[in-house]
Length: 146
Image (tube, rainbow, N blue to C red; front, side, top):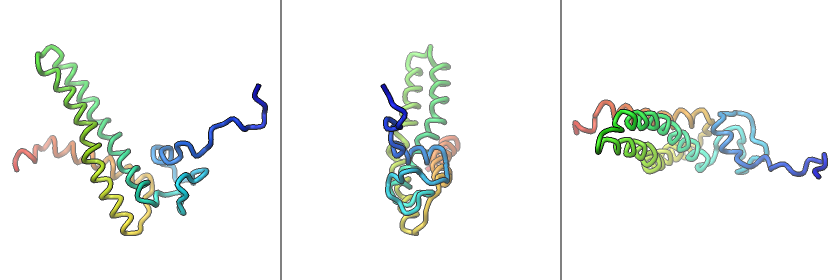
């Protein structure tokens, strides 16, 4: 059986970066997974990119899942309209994966080139800001006027 020595727990490094980004903690990660010189912030390009990209995907799903469910509920009797909900959900996933990768990389590249650190709250703001801009442009129909 298990003894009280404490050797069977998972290492604290598992999911350290993901946990720091999602919880918006500003305290040092235990174990410092990436070996960063600044454990309270996102210092390296992959960390910054991942933080902004993760929040862009999460916030996009936050906007698109209710819209897809509403479309599914209201158009469930329509012959072809019920497939609109599938397209809305696909747009909520495929959009951030394709465009979100590029824009998050551009943001992280600017931060890295400027030598700045990014705290997780900035990653939240920039990721949610990307999704918010997509929603605003979709509602304003700016692209239809071009």
